[in-house]
Image 1 (tube, rainbow, N blue to C red):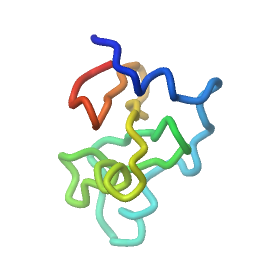
Image 2 (image 1 turned 90 degrees about the vertical axis):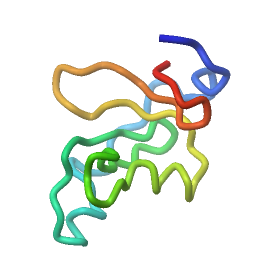
Image 3 (image 1 turned 30 degrees about the horizontal axis):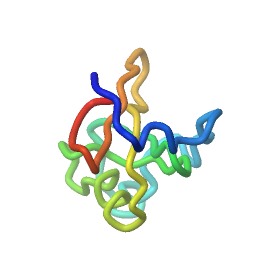
Length: 86
């Protein structure tokens, strides 16, 4: 894992999840493959293996750079700007 300048901008403590699943998938009637939590605002979106790719879409619309997995027993984070695990 690497450090990036965007990690320092993540609020502490991290925001609470706004949902327990991807609301865009629910609205679309699709199933999220895995979930991601935006560490800027708490939005929950689906991963890029899902049809909607809603976590990436959230980054593109908001510019919020860092997310973490929202899957049980996983702890990694991803910076969309740097394109790396952080």
